[in-house]
Image 1 (cartoon, one colour):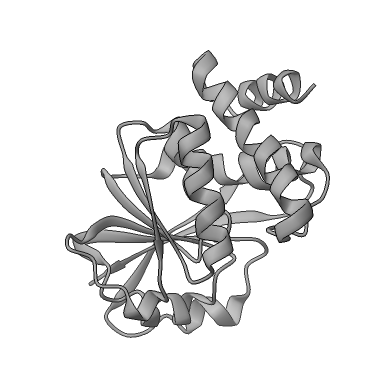
Image 2: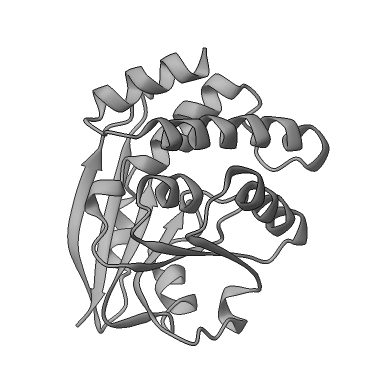
Length: 206
């Protein structure tokens, strides 16, 4: 059932996936559903809704990523990092979260589903010092743009970019982008079967 729905949604979004990638995406939903009963990783309880609200919602930004090294800040159970890693095997994703149970889940997903382009790190973002800076800093429902830039200022490379995944846009939030940063793109995203606004904001250091 999930596989058939995934095929339908991928086609709607013009995304192509190998059989292996489809298996991994469905496997991720199944693991999230199973672990969620004990660990409360997401408020979404229904696997079909997880497919829409977590997998497809994450993949909506896939075509907009530029670079090879990304960090997903406040990733929770691995969103959007794990679905993006599955669909972009040529890119590496660091999944950062401060809660041990979420990191344990991510590591189990990595092991069970054979995803070799993710690394899970248990840390608060302001305390994390990467050995190498990132082409992209991702956050999904993590914080306001202002807070994201404040807490993550040390993470991108010189030509790196911040990617903020947002729902409905708050005008006042856009006006609070700190000096020294520039909002380069506001991209409206479309997610199958999701009748809610979704946006991707791209911000760079001036």
